[in-house]
Length: 443
Image (cartoon, rainbow, N blue to C red; front, side, top):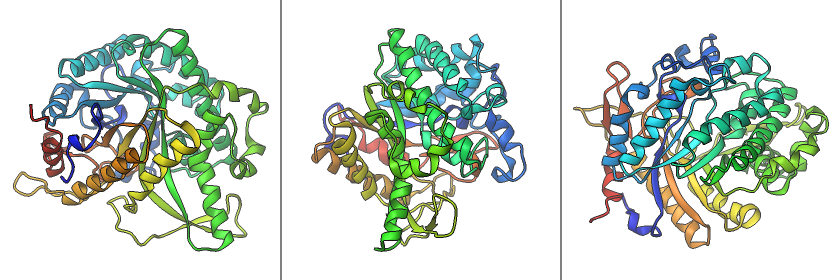
């Protein structure tokens, strides 16, 4: 690893991230069903129709996983609570679920790890999905109730709390493109989900602040560099539309209390009546912002097709196991753009960055040099952003463990720790060992 922790400012936080449904196993501990259970059980949605019933069995093996973080010289752990575990019907509390997260947070603190808590990483209780899920305004209020319960239990011991992980995935990817649960391809449902997920964020922030939660409160947004396929005005406009949908919609709603015109052109006819009245709630002041970044996409005009009338074209750069181009300049670009145009000096964390790689076990070892190079390149982009004045406070690698990669099942591996899904044995990869050396404190 070309970097060490000493190349970054004093107090810069290095961590690794996971999500509840992807690692815990949802078939025990009083956990209720969520819309990913039914989405994955429907043929054609997920590779091999795999679900998260057992996943990495983190629910039972969490002490071992936290020990890996401590042994790897990490400062922090970004985790999420499963809404369906805490409230199996989306409304009523399961004490067993809350107690699990209580023990988990205490376990982090006992190991000197800072807990970074995400309230919602896509595990919507099926009972709420039955009532329309994120297309139903009531779900936003239920989320606020959930946020109050969980932050009331954990909020005095965590480093920070984010309301929602990646609203674009929750809304657009899942309701317009149909690639994630609930698997809809419906512009009306998508527009409502795009709005209601932000309303949930705002109501959740209001609830936690009213309850006196002491932890800094924010949101985690994902950003994807939108490049035009050519220098033509048409392709430039196609990239601008996708930039508005993916990158500008959520941050502008929160920081400017408005939606970008390029996205409203297609979505406004389908937004809830009177949506403008919600913008003040959505625009709650952030204490910090989480940035997830993986790749770029190249966009081309697709005249004659329905809005947004764009198509993606393949790019020339090296790609990860997901087929995503490796483009670290995009991370630097977003960090500086956010500071310049939207958040100023607000504390920012890179809450996810990592790569899926076709790792192989050879003699009990996993040599993932491509992942080490990926991390080095993106750390370089972060270091440059700090030099350019961005108030970047930390970085969380995605992911600590190989895990359930949503519609890809267990086929794609992002972890710095290999998981054998037959035995559930954990084996640190070369990237974990490289980070361990880079993060050593030499004291």
